[in-house]
Length: 186
Image (cartoon, rainbow, N blue to C red):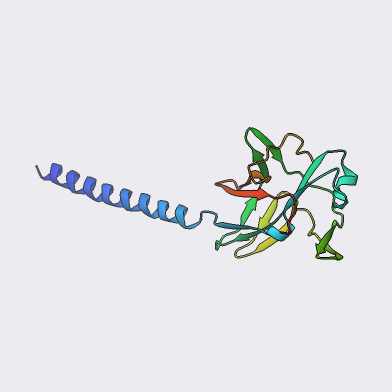
């Protein structure tokens, strides 16, 4: 009887320490999860057609009728480093994987007509984002996602192109809804 009581108490102690170890591992896993904050820079996010009179020099590099630029800032809000292994942009069933684009200075000239005054301003874009991205603790990066082939993109009722930008880490996928407008100036 004494041996059964000792075995019983040891099994209770084993169950308690096993469950507490499992909970500690779960909280450690939860604490080290990637926490990214992604913000779209709307002033530098839009799409353009080949027929547009003024457009970025991206259109000279690709033979396409419609292209887009998405400017994004990505922040690591975690105490641990995070690696972005893949970025995709999708609309409906079509998905575009962002590859390492050419690193050239991209400018966009804007024709603004206010009453009778016509003025031109110029936006210089950040370099394209290169994959993979390693963000240290509380680090951030910004850049552009350049989409050259949006031939079959579907416009919504406001003549915008709704897309979803997906940021892939080894442990989690972050999704951001973006509405690409024809021009970034209203």
